[in-house]
Image 1: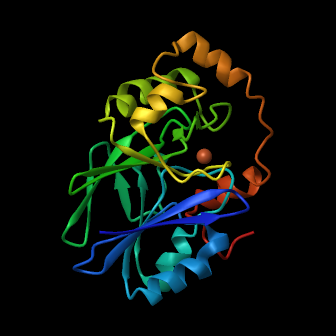
Image 2: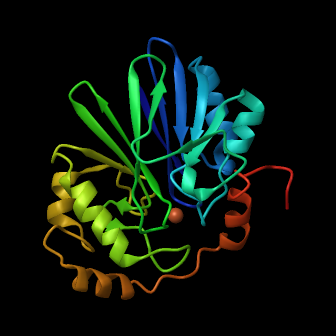
Length: 236
Ligand SMILES: [Fe+2]
């Protein structure tokens, strides 16, 4: 398995390139329009065939490059079925599996709370477990729950009952990091996550989330409608 973590500065978004070494078939998770050229050149340089552009959810802080990648490379666009986006080719239900080449299987799991349709993706490869947690679980934090159908109560259950029940060694790769962290582990987050360690009860978590008092994302009014069209380029 070839694995690359890529970063977009403006929205602090991580995009993940995952490829099967035998077939040279690859996917991108949460690709960003601003870094389309960079991603295309990496894919071409590595001689990969991009089969899927996958989103974890309808992002509010950046526009997805899924449509552009489909137009340029002929890949399929995938994401949660409950987003009800007609622009997608593949709509994941909970526990659906996407094959990457012939050596990798990625499971799609419904992990609501940041948005009600948010999905995360899990890959077990050799002895490692990779969790692409989107905006549900961040490193020492979690996604906000104050807009886009977010719910602190639901996110609490997702993190405690789904993520924190994964094995301690699970590597957590989020969609964003604002502090130069690359990844974490479930073990570390259970113990050290400042908003939701495994000891934090629901009441305390709700207070923690209310105290965040975050600004509205700068691009939300542009990003959400465009992402509901899979980031189609000839718009707006
Ligand atoms: Fe988000």
